[in-house]
Amino acid sequence: MRLAEPDGVRNESKTLQTLQLLEFPFAVPEMICLVRDDSGETIGLIESAVAGLPLNFLSRGFNAESQLETIAQVASAVHRLPKSKFTHLVQRSDSRTHVLEELNVLPASLFEEFREAAMAREWILCNLAEARTSTVLHGDLLSQNLLFAIPDDHEIAVLDWECAQIGDAAYDLAIVTRGVRRPLGVANGLQRLVSFYNEAAEQEIPPSAVVVHELLLHLHWLAESQTENRRTRPRALCQSPRSELSLWTQIKVKRRVKGSDRKPFKKNLNRGIATVRSRTKRALC
Image 1 (spheres, rainbow, N blue to C red):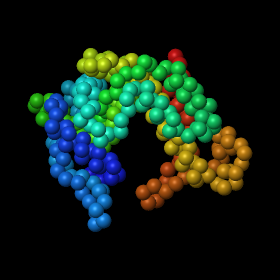
Image 2 (image 1 turned 60 degrees about the vertical axis):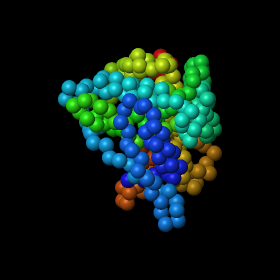
Image 3 (image 1 turned 90 degrees about the vertical axis):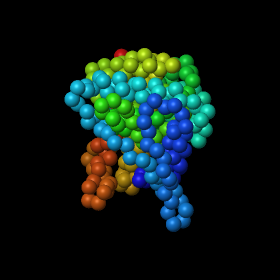
C-alpha cells in the first residue's frame, strides 16, 4: 500500500489503469484499489507488487552508462504515450508553457534577494528553445523507480507514477541529471543521456533544454530553503531592513525533523545558492 496526497493518489490510480489499456512496452504495477479513511477521504492505494531489483542496484555487467541508456529508452516510451488518454493529469500545451509556468510560480523575493537566482532566470529566458509539443511525463525517472523485473529477459518495470503530468520532455531527463557534473558517475552524462534519448525518441531535444529544467529544479529547492529559513529566523532579524546573507552567518537556524534529529536550513540555503551559481556559470560556458 502507498500513502500520499489524495489528488496524487487518485491521479496515480487513473494513470495505472490507463497504462493497463495501452501497449506500453514496459511492465507497470496493476492498480488494485484505493484506500479511504473512516470519513471517506482517499489516503492511499493498493497496487500489485513487482519483483525485481532497482536499476542502480545492478552493478555486475551493468555500468552507469548503460543505466543512462535504459532510462532514455524508458523516457522515450513514456513520451510516446497518447496524451488524449491522460486527461486527468496536469496539462501543458508545449515546452515553453511548461518552463514559463515553473518560473512564474517562484516568489519574486527569490530574485530580489539572490543575484544567482536572477542570473539563472535570465539564462533560462535567453535559452528558451522553439516550443516543442508536450508529452506524457513520468516525473520521477530515477534509477530506483526502474526495476529489472525479470533479469533473464531484461524486462524493465516502471514504478511510482504519482508525479506523472503533461509537459516538456526535457523535464524527465533533468530529474535524472539534476545539474550534477557527472550524472550517475558518467562523464558528460547529460550529453550521453540526451544522445541516447534522441536516438529513440520521436521528438529530439537539445541539451540546453535539459539544463533549463535543471536550473528550475534548483531554483525551486532554493525557494523552499529560503522559506524555511524565514520561518525560523529570530524576530529581530526578520524585521531588519538588511537581507544580505552575511547577516545570518552567526545564527544557526534549525528545525526538528523526525523526533530529536535537526536539520540546518541555513546550510541548505547556502548550498542551494552555491549550486545555482555553479550550474549557471557552467551553463554560460
